[in-house]
Each structure stands twice: as C-alpha cells, then as structure tokens.
Image (cartoon, rainbow, N blue to C red; front, top):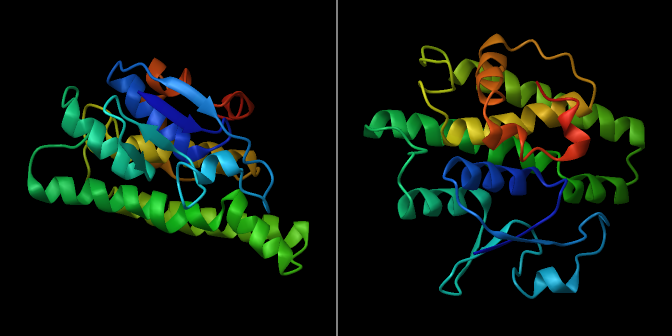
Length: 210
C-alpha cells in the first residue's frame, strides 16, 4: 500500500496512527501542500479535491478522506478493532470522531486559513479564529465523553475516537492554548504511552504533545 500525505497534515497523522495500531506497513509519498493557495498538480492527479491523505491499496484503488480510509482498514484488518462492539457505542464513537474530523478540523486547516487570509483577515485575527474554533470544538468533545469508560476515549483500548483526538490536541498546543479538558487529556495520556501514537507524531508537534 502507498499513503500520500504531508508531514504537517493532521488527517495524514490519523491514518498513520491507525496503520501503526494494526502493524501495517505502507510506502509514504509526501506532497508539498505548504502553499495555501496552490494545490500540487501531482496531488490533483490522484484526488480531485487536492487533499491528503490518499491511500492507494494493493489492488490499485485510491481511497480518500481519513475516516473513510481508517474504517476501510478496520474492515480489512479487524484486529485490533478501532470500533467497539454494539451499535449504540459504535455510533457514539463515530459521532465523536466526526465532531473532530468533519466539524472542528476543517475550520482550522491551512486551506481554510488561506481562504480567510485572502479575505484580508490579519494574522492576529486568524490566530484568534483558530483558538476560538479549537476551544469550542474541544469543549464539546469533552462533554461527548461524559459517562464513557476509560482510560481511552471509549474503553480499555484505543480506537477511532482516540485516533482523531490526539492530533487535534497537539494542534491546540501549537497555538499556545491552555487545555482544561480533564477527560480528553486523560485519554491522550493513555494514548501517548503507545508507540503507534508518539512514533507517528510530526516532529514539530512532538515537543508539544503529552
């Protein structure tokens, strides 16, 4: 398999965590997505959205969107599972994961901030926007874990929710946020004892992660 990504991409990090949890090896292909206004032609050729990650399977299929990729991995290699047994708990895990990956994260990506910059938002305003979005989103996620068993987000082993949570907390620290979310931080601490999480962490975020 081949994973197209970028070292700073939190969505790529999610997939790398999932691969590591399942002890799967992939060939990494990095695309320079640092320029907020220009999508590399090489990336558009494999994903019309111009986004990473993209996973090329051994059969030649190209999969996009981190959550879709991770669920495909979980279906193909079900051990260890990234989703819990039981339809209600699985729905809760998916809801938490989407709260991060599809509600919160798109507000604070380089692509989103680049568009806001083109609307003449200042760097100070962009920083305030990002910190506000992260604070509101993480506060909601803290509440979503009410009543969930630990030490991970939803139980005794890491799963899809944890895969989404850890990168987002690292980004919040990069913006100098004082994190006061005890349940989220407890789950993160449990995750960061595992190589699948800390060995895949982008170097610039490592010192800011638990």
